[in-house]
Image (tube, rainbow, N blue to C red):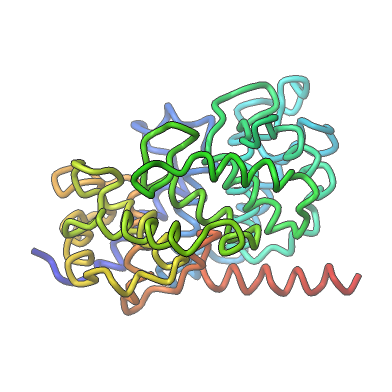
Length: 338
C-alpha cells in the first residue's frame, strides 16, 4: 500500500479537468461549474493553484461570471454551465448549489466579488425556501432537502446577508430531521446519513445557531453517531462500505462538533490513500474504483482535516480553503466599511 500522498499527480489530474471535460463526464456538462469547483479548490488545497498563471485565472473568473443570472428577480443566481445561451434568457435561472459553488470558486481564484449581484442573489435564495423551511435548488422546482438548506446558508454567509432565509423555519426543518439514532436525514422521517448530517450541522453553525438549537445530549448523540461511522475510513450509513468522501463529510462534522480528535486518524489516512492513483492522479470512492473529481477533492479535504503535510487547511463549515476564507474575511471588512 502506498503511504505517500501523490501531490504532483493529483495536481496534474485536476489540471486536466480545467482544460477539457473528459468524454465520460460529458453527461454532466449542465453542471460543469461543479467540476470546476472541485478542480480549482483541489489545486488550492494542494497548494498548487500557482500552476494557473494570471491569464488562466482571469479566464476562469470571467467564465464563472458568465454563469451569473443577474437582475432576474427570484430567478437570480448562478447556473451550472454556458449550455443555455444568453439569448435564451427566459430559460435561465439560478441554482442554489451552482450559486454557492460559483461564489466559492471566485473566492478561491482571489476575486473580490465586486461583480456579484448580491441583492438579486439573495432574492433568488428567498424565492427557493418552502413553507416547511427546506429549499428547492431552483425556482422552477426540484428536490427539496438538507443539501439546499446548506447551500442557502453558504450563500448567505459568503454574501454576509441572511435576509433571504427564514431561519426559524429552516431550523425547525433541521430539528425535525434528527433521527431516532441521533444522526440527521435529508428530511423528517428519513434515514440518518453522513452527507445530510454534515449539511445540517454546518448550516446551524453558519447561522450561529448550533449550540442554541441542539441540547448537549443531542450534540453528544450526534458525536457518537458520527464516530460510529468509522471502520478504517468512514462510511455514510450503518452497514455500508467505507467511502473516501465521508472522510470529509463525517470528519468535517466532527471538526465542527469538536470531536474529530476521537477518531483514528492513522486508519482514516490509510484508507484514503488506498484509493489514490499514484501514477495518473486522483482518488476514488473505493480502492477498486476509478478516480473522479468529487472523491479526489473531498478525499484531500479529509486528509487536510487530519493535518496531512503539504496540504492547506480547510474551513470545515464552508468547505473552502483557509486562504479562500481569509479572502472572504477581507471582503467582509471592505463591505462593512462602505
